Image (tube, rainbow, N blue to C red; front, top):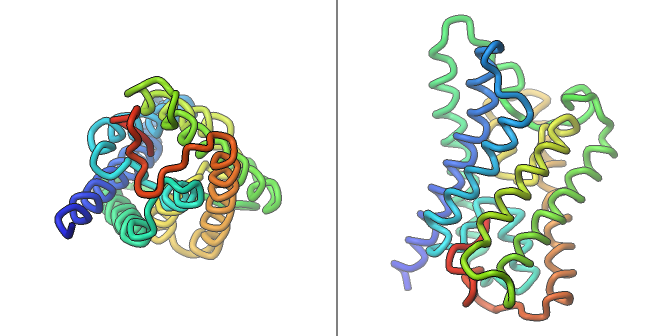
Length: 247
C-alpha cells in the first residue's frame, strides 16, 4: 500500500511539473523572441499537449490529475479516494513551485531578460485584458466547471475506451484560447501558485482567486456529473474503460 501511494504521488509530481514547466515555458521562453512568438494558439496548444502527453505517460498510475482542482472535483464526484486527496494536492503544488523555479533559472540565463508577470494569473491591472475581479472569477469558475465536466464524461462508463486523454487535452487548449486574455488562464491552483511565488508582489496577493474559483467550479462539476453519469467510483479515476485517463 505504501508503495502504491508513493508511485501515485510521484506520477502526480512529474505530470504537474511537466504541465507548469512546458506550459508556462511556452509563454515565458517564446516571449523572449517576439519575432518567433507562438501567440495565444501556440501557448494554448502547449498546455493541452502537456496534459495529453502526461495523461498517457502516467495516467494509468495516478489517474493523471496534475491539478488540485481536478483532484478535489473528482473527489466530489466520487472518483477520487479520500486518502489520495491531500497527498496529490501537496505533490502538485510542490511540483509546480519547483517547475517554476527551474523555468526561472533557464529564462534568466538570457541577458536583459525581464520576468514581468512570469506567466502568472491575475485580475484588474494584472489581467492581460484588464478584466475586473468579477469577470475573472466567473471565467475561472465556468472554465474549470467544463474542464471537469469533460474529464468526468470522457472517463465514465460508456465513453470511448482509451481515448480520454484526447478530449481532455483539447478541452484545456480551448479553455486557454478563450480565457488567456481574461486571466491568463489558471483552472489549476498549482499552476497559478508556482509562477506567482516567483513573480511576487501583487501576483501573490491575487493568488486567492485562482484557488477559490477553480475549486468552486470543479466541485460543482463533480456534483453535477455524479448525478448525470450515475457511475461514480469510490476509489480512483482509473475506470474500467479508460486505461489512459485524465488530467
